[in-house]
Length: 526
Ligand SMILES: C[S@@+](CC[C@H](N)C(=O)[O-])C[C@H]1O[C@@H](n2cnc3c(N)ncnc32)[C@H](O)[C@@H]1O
Figure 1 (cartoon, protein in one colour):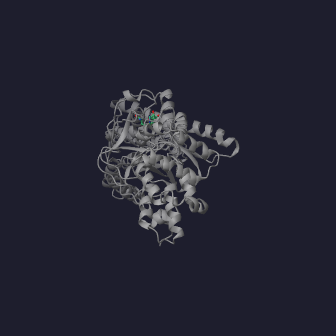
Figure 2 (tube, protein in one colour):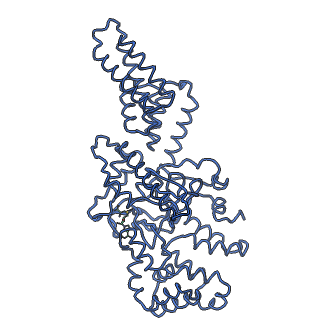
Figure 3 (cartoon, protein in one colour):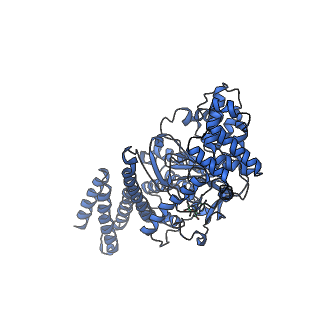
């Protein structure tokens, strides 16, 4: 009687699994598992000595199938628990090892996933007819584990081929950085050694992203609200399913009392970090909302580039480790979005011990405008440039230039007035770069206008000198790059190509060979 019932339940569960009705399949397998466990506890009374091992086999398979269904529902933690329980019964159960490997791979735990796939191959060298896919997983794990260890990403072919096909496989990577207390606010990310411009400091996959095309009516505000709601749902769903993500989310700032926050060890964010699944940290919805408010990033921002399929969309996401990067108006890093990954690289040379920063808003704008923008972000910028410019911007001439620019003043004249002012106020070194960055729009317009250059060209600095001084304090930026690239195009590439490529590396990072970088800069292949 019980055997018949078991048979029926098993058939029903298998059918649901085959029909890919995952939620129903989970429920059906729960019944099979309960029945198996119940029978196992009563087996002493059974006449057939093989009965117990049969029941164990059934239980192992049911747990394995429930794990598969749960993994499709993205209930990763529960699926992993099922796998572990199944492997306790049959440590070489092929299907379970394969499922566990895939789950670990999904959670970016490459070495552990590799161990599972290797064990699966050992358990069944024919891979139950799945040899091709098992070998595929083994290769993928090895490659991702290598990338994660070395950071040797290369997106060149994909770029040169016009982003055709899927973006290349990326992996979690942490470069020469650590989390420390920051002089800017709370915690920040710091270089542990000297780093060249364009070097990757981290690559990480989003906890969740939400993308859409914003309609032009009401400037897409309603669509943005709907997206934001979907995004919150995705994040909270994932945090509820995955205890590790919950623990990591709880290390992020809510914007309140940042000075009192603990400094987590960066190794916590490494893919091979110990799982502390016994932790009973629970997601708190109010906290999640504040964390998202403070740490979410918009893909298409001034300090970012979006490559490939997601470039036509408005996208928002949460990338855990990137959330420790503070804003500076004198940034030294930028980010690149590829699929659900963010790649953060330095945009100028960085010294050991220096804080890694990018801009949350446009750093090539005047102090007062930046001050307004920080208000929408809910903080007051404490960076060195703001401290310097706060004093400078009290000067009457600077105010006059700001007002003049708003009223359509001749840009060459504005640049001349600022340069004269800096000479009189004895502004030196970085100070010049700071103020030129603030009024970059005037400089770029003046340099781009023949009329303006005819009148002011001899009295204002050469374009190279202005660009260099801004680069030194604000790192590479598209707009600085554009001036150089336009110059290169005008001179048919006779001008300094190496210099443009160096700047290009600051904007795009070093994951591109020369030819790909030229494609990105739209310079063809000279
Ligand atoms: C994404 S978090 C950056 C990491 C954060 N400092 C922490 O300890 O987790 C953003 C928050 O950091 C603070 N912050 C970032 N840049 C800042 C700056 N330049 N000046 C003042 N506060 C800043 C603000 O409180 C902001 O809401």
